[in-house]
Image 1 (cartoon, rainbow, N blue to C red):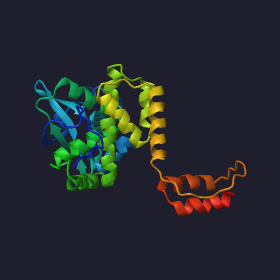
Image 2 (cartoon, one colour; image 1 turned 135 degrees about the vertical axis):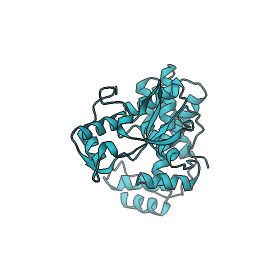
Image 3 (cartoon, helix red, strand yellow; image 1 turned 180 degrees about the vertical axis):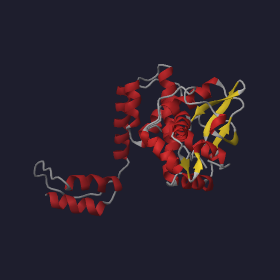
Image 4 (cartoon, rainbow, N blue to C red; image 1 turned 90 degrees about the vertical axis):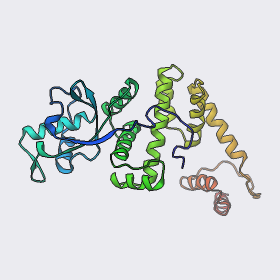
Length: 276
């Protein structure tokens, strides 16, 4: 089962196999030792209510533990412990924290994981993908099967389609990040690409994957060509309509556009009749 609709090979697409484990808070770096922005009040409150659901990612740091992803969550726990709070009646420092330990992590992968963790926001697909992938590893779920995706979706209280969309978006985002680093696309063009329709993004992805450069003008040309091909492939019915000038009717025009996209010719003919 191919999750991503276009073939993308990105460093983050397959995290190396780590070891699921659990830590007590005292086994991890202290608040002062963690180099990350302070956690928000909402995050601290959410952890107090729901604990840490997505495993943190760790690796060796000499004889200590280094946190690759989950720094602010651990900082939140330190805040809660300092306040003497409990989770379901148990002191915060005595509740186990889910984690995945990586014995060997190359620098490129470590940088990608830390980037996603440090820039986590609602529209950051790479960060969301990292959460999905770590959850899959912790519970030994196969992300390449529908059954595995169903279980992952349950963990995040969402649908399989949403999970697949996040994986696809993360692959695309990572591709544009790599292209930016190589100077093959500007940040402005990358932002514009993210707002394109799915088919055009797939075409742009193919270009980037083949090592080509992409410009804003090239994106616009690609969109126009796609629309022309889409219209050329539509076999419109013959409707005798007398031309009586240009008429714009709010609501009807939008409905007509939707009917054309769905190729619902009965609605199209009915709306055209109303317009004349």
